[in-house]
Length: 81
Image (cartoon, rainbow, N blue to C red; front, side):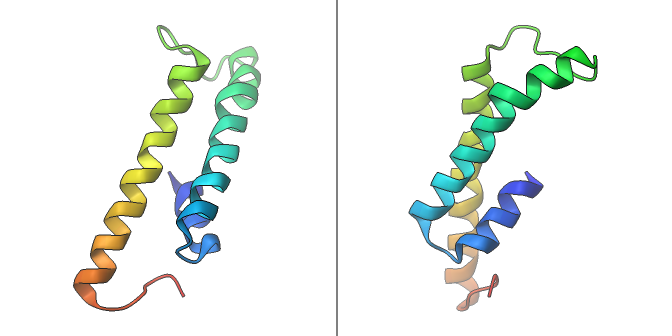
């Protein structure tokens, strides 16, 4: 989640850029870094496949962007400038 927040700041409110960057970062974590962490025995996915874990990570990006969008509309200004 902290990486998604940094990507939100980097994308400057551009939804397509945010989702693309987030998909790349989540994909790299879900498909490559998880295998490294499994070998070191730090983490394991008991009943989740790599694709299920990717979707679990990625759907939160939509929630984060939606919450930020609503918050900015409510406050009347952009927070991440």
